[in-house]
Length: 461
Image (cartoon, rainbow, N blue to C red; front, side, top):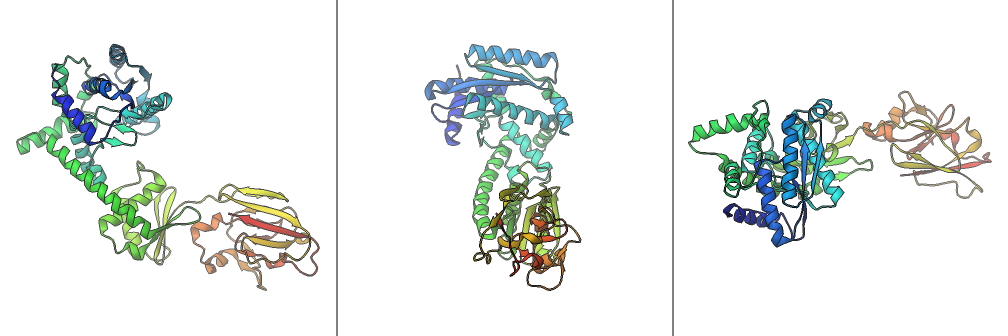
């Protein structure tokens, strides 16, 4: 038995701190050479580290009988190792069409979802995949061609969350040679030869062209460049996190408020990373809206935008420019109108706040300087109380004023940002606005010497 690759495998696992003693690992086992060698190496490592392994195989149903044969082969190999085997069939083509994804992206999502389900079902620690050095080089080149940022140029991580890739250090040639030397059985996936898939075009056209141009195999050099960029990105992320705390704050509605004056003092690459961090916080790392063009447009909006300007990040997130602040916020849904129940806590689900409406006795506690607490004359209410959002054309008589005012102008005077208007509860009766909750009572409903019944209004944020 020739174990040179195994020694390198041990060194990589230790260097990247991938596996601990007594670890429980779900091995993504397609039956191909990479996963077959990975299963062999992990099974051998289990002797010294007391690992618990399970093999998981997803049948993509893309190659008819061949896919079924691969599943059967994987089950037999797992049985030889005395390792629990789990498999599932998935109509990847149908899933990809329904979700408007390429076959490659659809297969990837279905596969990782399946592996995570198995991991959770078994209560295991990690998922191990057989990605190798060639996969890394192809990924880096594809990301480069797409105009990826520094994170994408770093390629695949040896460890991300609960996913480990212990073979990332080894070339495809090394892996196949090791399989041959140690009589490790595997199957060949015919779809890996089809140039209709993007990765295969890079594998069979782009990489050979680079090799021909430079006179040697570029895979190892590209892999090493990716390692350098990963370390660079890690440092940049650390700095971005530190500076992010200095230039941002979180508002009451979950909005991110960026201090432009502080932001201007940072290097451009840090500015870009901060904007990426903000967008990802709202949309998730894999959202299709996160592009270089978007980040450049956002950066221009933040540094040069006029007061009141708005940039749409995606369908659900916008950035508002207010003097020296840039505010990132999810589009807020208007409050669905509903009837208020007296002597009850009424939940306003859109804002997460509550309105408590109760009768009180006596007159000595009818004044409050808390904007979220008001008292009104119950006998002046016409019909039932209701809560809703602001509507265009709304008006009321602000407390202390002798004339009516449009709610739109009231918001402007109070410097209420436009994105907050719909999240401010408006308490009404059948005819009038009674309270712009948390901001101003209507003068007509105030307590007077003629008041007999007092209603206490309390907004709980």
